[in-house]
Amino acid sequence: MITEHSIYIGASQHMTFTEDNSIDLVVTSPPYPMIEMWDDVMSSQNHRISDNLEEKPEEAFELMHQELDKVWKECFRVLKIGGFLCINIGDATRTIKGNFTLYNNHSRISKACVDLGFVGLPNIIWRKQTNAPNKFMGSGMLPCGAYVTLEHEWILIFRKGGKREFKKADAKLSRMKSSFFWEERNVWFSDIWDVKGTKQKMRKDSSRERSAAYPFEVPYRLINMFSQKGDMVLDPFLGTGTTMKAAMLLGRNSCGYEIDPKFEIIIREGIDELDIDMCNNLIKSRFDAHKEFIANRKSSGKEIKHFNETLNCEVMTSQEKELELNYLESISEDKNTGTYKVVYESHSDLTTLPFTHTFFKKAK
Image (cartoon, rainbow, N blue to C red; front, side, top):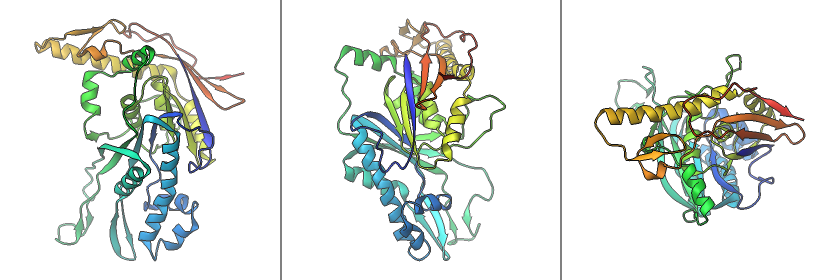
């Protein structure tokens, strides 16, 4: 199995490199309107945003979302029927001229996407709680002057049209091979996620650490949940490339747009510094976690009725019997096109890791 991954530098309001009905899944986290760190990015799209921020903040809020609306419209264009759009977004609180206000980004985006024709599906609340003693906003212990702190973000989920159809035998088999474990389903499809940060390590110790728009675990789950191997995943706000790296690990093709040309080197360095052995260790850890889950079930006297011949392990349901996990063999970059290619190994038993690989190579 081979996947390809393309980086495009430019505004995602016009995704000119992406054809109509060519994308299976969009996973992204846009700049959050009315969060101060994004003011310059948003204002560069429309100067009226900065003109209104201090005098008419509600107008600035709406203008920011009108720029995002253009991206959601493009996502609708490029998605296939049955494809999903997953948006990580946080609401904003801001004090302007002494007035403290909540700006509901998630509800504004939800309305825009439904108006475009997307089908709204149940959302996920991503809990990002903190134990800091000063996390509460306002006057502390005095009534009528303190504000509830925001300790969550939203993962909004939409679908273009009806359910995706799997009519041909090869499509059905690919879907079965892309299934997930029963115990993973029980965590991933909850409407509340408790993801505190990036647990996975895929880069060498000497690599510089940069914060991503969201932890690796977020796109990792969403790509597993709403796509299958060989699908095309798009991130219109690529940032540091977290979505693309998750797609690489999971055997999906991907592409992404980034408006800031300075981020291209960050994205490429992040991919160049991926360590194949560390990536494969993550894949093995997923398999090991499943084996531990099965062992615990059996030790408590519960019966396991199904067996996956490919993985050589017991599974909870018949839908997991064709599930495959594939180690990465190589990641290479075509220096002429800038496109990355990932080659995967096929293993019937993930008990041991493959031999050490050269972690990265550039194609001639």
